[in-house]
Length: 263
Ligand code: DAK
Image (tube, rainbow, N blue to C red; front, side):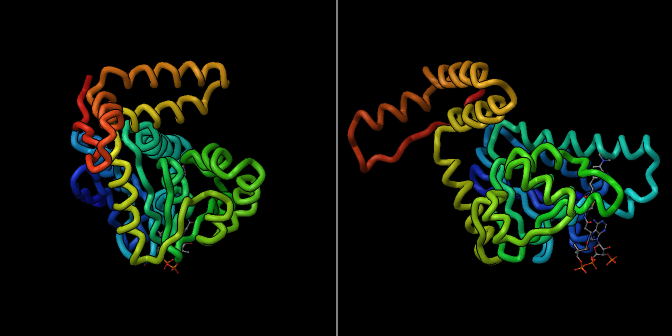
């Protein structure tokens, strides 16, 4: 559809932002297409998503500066809301999302990668929050998510200076989990997604929810969230099959997780 492609490979869905002439910059049309593609994902048949950008140069080079340059305050707020809604949708999707960052991830590009659960990148990737150089603040969650991922000091340094960092530095500060060559990036992303998809889907979903929801509250409240989601796994076919396989002591037998079932 439009500026965003979707492919399904088994239990894994691959979303590609496809506007390479503008280095996959996010204008309102791209954001609307992205939202529609995410809304259309069959969550009963998909256990992990990969988000990437078309072409060899850029993941997402930020929000569309041309479109933003003429916005009024009210339009800027409306544009920010479309972006924030989509990013939050990615962050709170029940299934894990892997950002396969294949080049520039600047401004809104860095921010969208941070709304994903896991980031891996190619060795030509460049991350940064250049907004203060454009007279704005990172407005798609950058001031919030970067500090949570890399720590307050490093986030403030990156945001205040607007310096970009390369893949090796992104790895060093924990912004990405791994760096691969460009050729290796998608196969590695698919392998990681397939590994996640092999596991019990209800348990994986509950882990995502426990981690995300727990980070927003005190440890006492977080432990209660964890307890509920732990208990929720019991009596599922996944739990019975997973534990049953272990107890049968039959190592030749693979874990037979059942397809996700809406309870
Ligand atoms: N927007 C629009 N077009 C872009 C773009 C962008 N962010 N980035 C690149 N392009 C376009 C270029 O204009 C160029 O188009 P043509 O001239 O060919 O028509 C084409 O992509 C190729 O780019 P370059 O010719 O510049 O390619 P180079 O290899 O020389 O440079 C670059 C690549 C990534 C270093 C450079 O393009 C660049 O600096 N791009 C801008 C990066 C940037 O500053 N990104 C942050 C944007 S600010 C908000 C919420 C969020 C945000 C804003 C508001 N609210 C809550 C309201 C987010 C803001 C941002 O993301």
